[in-house]
Length: 166
Image (cartoon, rainbow, N blue to C red):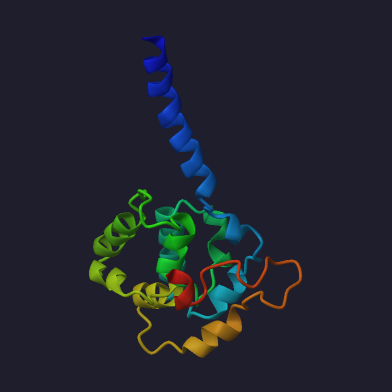
């Protein structure tokens, strides 16, 4: 009879440990440089608070350190960020997309925008900052990708392309 209790405790703990070991979390973001001033330069003084708020939402939804929000790249794909946390389709998620959808809805945006598989950090920031004519090349130039920075992780360190999202 004691064996049943041991198995009933051991198996769920083992499953939890395997799940936690497969979760990459925010490790991919740790090797990136943070560029708050450069992100800020990409937006007008009026649009900057809302742009920064959108970066905050992404960090809040994915439990990323808020201080690292300026290390996000404009070209990071939202689904790619999600896949960094849950690389296997059978893994239960922490409701990150739903939380991000709530932030969007509370701000008066259509949360179905999250259904786009190639939605980027830039797309969300520009949507919330209210900069429909914002020049995406300007943001790319203002916020460097760190790909040539030897102190950053390997170029495949984060979800920066739509291919990373699958």
